[in-house]
Length: 74
Image 1: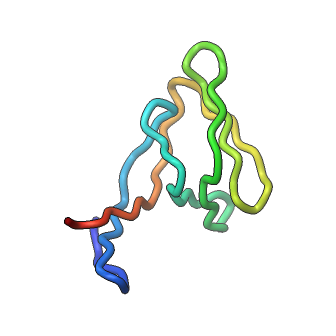
Image 2 (image 1 turned 90 degrees about the vertical axis):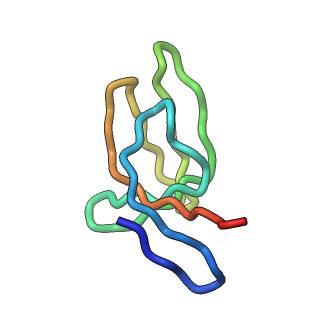
């Protein structure tokens, strides 16, 4: 699902894994939208996500989540 947001930005709902997660992705956790602020690579393909709100989440190599990603059109 994609939708235009104010400012000419396309917002898309995508499935992410530890290999594809990016800074700025918005993940819904426990009914709260959390924006990824930083990523730390861990052994065996896992990543630790640091959200802008201060929470941490560890994504293992096989973890799959749905996130909202802002895509700028050029």
